[in-house]
Image 1: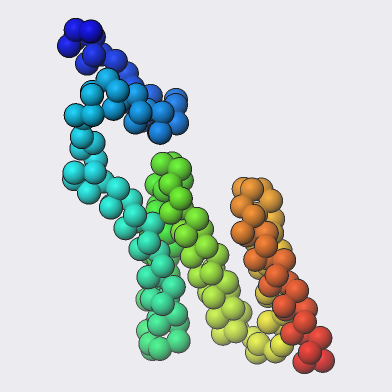
Image 2 (image 1 turned 90 degrees about the vertical axis):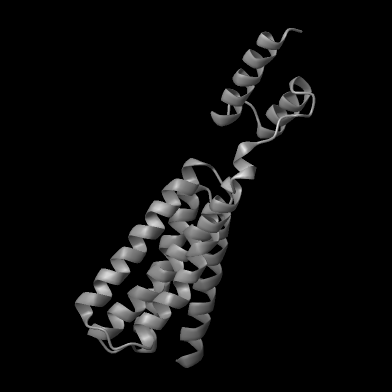
Length: 178
């Protein structure tokens, strides 16, 4: 096969891979056949995959950061709100980017958003009213119901399982303290 025809085929396979017209493994296999094993992926050379992995793991650092800001600092309410909005903006952009690439790391971002949202709701409600065990149980029940609904809508089974298990634990806790 002449070189020009090989280049056209290689370019087309790369296009298929980028637009997910074929599974990535098939495209890699075809590329290795047509390039005779000489093609190196530039994305791995420049740390492309490491960048996506970093964007996937970076949200895990947000949980201790938000916890530290909530419980161990004396920042004004306006500054806390600004920081939390910035954190949610970062997490939202991160979730959109990782979801658009269909990377597995997006699930970490989803979980971090859910945990931080629960933490902020509990702290926000606790700053306005006295958090009795019943109020805490209601907050957990509503939040877990939200997790279950999101799990069914987005077909995320770990949200369904965590929501159901936390509802069972919160009901057990309320029954224990009564």
